[in-house]
Image (cartoon, rainbow, N blue to C red; front, side, top):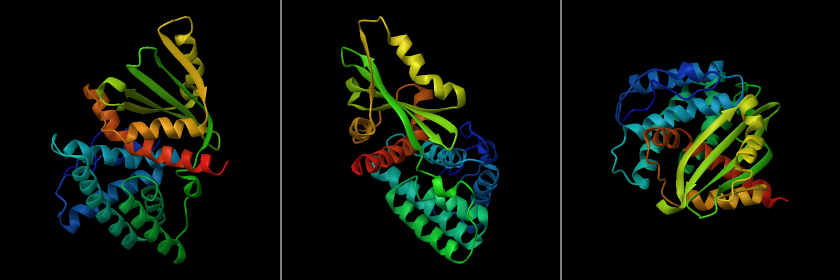
Length: 267
């Protein structure tokens, strides 16, 4: 099982995650230690919550890439949980500031079992006096600035875009849904900076005047409902770049949807 990518996603600090290490779920402690060290090195230079999230997303993508093509969803989740479980346990033993930061990210991304384990490990390290990184308290909880939906009027495909903000650091999460392939996520990716900030208006301008398309602004509840339905269906990427994007970012989409659902429930 490939557990850390040699080509992680773009994002501040994520380039440090490159290691090319591989092994199975019963890999010796030395290999797990090397994998964890690679992730910690990337986390150490991450200066924002998103950069740290993208580090872990790269590891998720590598695990997904290393699985057989015919692996079903339970098998994928089990493989990811096993890998993360070892990384989480090793991080707690290291008990450094970077280890606590990695555990904070693991507590909001990935399968529910590993998130729970990471929260418990992070709690123990914090109680022991290990210091948190400045962005740790915000990881997984960005502010939603705006959201939009667009697609073709024939119902073949639609897309949802959401602009988030981590205290002045804006990023957009974009999701393409294919209704002809079962209604699952066909592609998903992250845009940062000025491109992310201008994304909504750029898309609206591109859709304007085309009678075969639609565009609308939506709220957090609508995003949670639309993407929640898509996530409940099997992913359906077709092209190589779509497969890579989904492998790298589907768990981030899941975390953002859960975050928006919680926000909507309190309003």
